[in-house]
Length: 342
Image 1 (cartoon, rainbow, N blue to C red):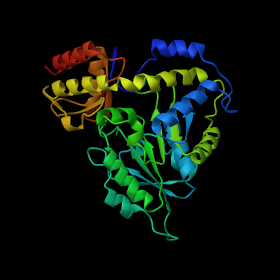
Image 2 (cartoon, one colour):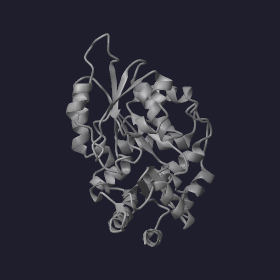
Image 3 (cartoon, rainbow, N blue to C red):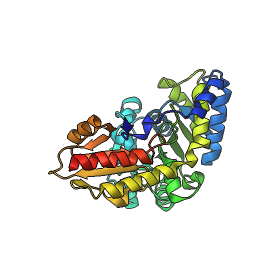
């Protein structure tokens, strides 16, 4: 099967498997796992932050960040199409007693800074005080689109001018930095915290990392423990994460190329509509015309022909390119789609 549902389906590389087998380990709750400690030090250095924390998942990474930044009863400002709001099971409300205050994402995933400024609460006993602004880069539901450094910096300026910290759901932030052709630490330098995934385009089997100031990471570590994320001899996972961070982060341009090549060809297939401007990284979103049928129908038909894709709406398909998809897979998928659309 050619699996284009997500870059989460990537398998660990042979180098990762060897590193995992040989990893030196200890108890991470005691902060005694040397491989996890190396990963965290490397992540903090790579992102230009003081400290880092290894967590099992990106969802947990975002949640421990929100809980470390906010007090119960505060509001989080975030996009109405953001992953934190859309796909993370309401964790900030359930675990933190926090209120989601959504603002519209435009088709490229951006939030208007003027709307952010207007949404930040003034002191008033009637309001839930604003505790945090959450951004997302790349933006999943917008189709892997990228916020520029200037856009991020302007949103940070607005929030920081009112004393509000800014967290980035940077699950695919290395894809964003690759697209912008700048070092990732430069892209995130004005953010207070960042979560990034090792288990998506970077191809590690498990894990994400949260980075920020030392005091913030100390709070996040406690929240990770509270949520059941305290790990023991998890250096076997961190070993793969080190390779993900040092090696796999350097090959993402290949995935972007495959996505662009695929999108340009898919846009020529009758019944498929692709906004090529949004195809910036490794995700291709395609809308289906009424004549073409439903996304569910296409998911089933493609699966029957050896291709797995995701439905992102009743008439919207998502194709994600990653380390386990090569040029031959791309061409075969296009051929299958052309024959079915025929």
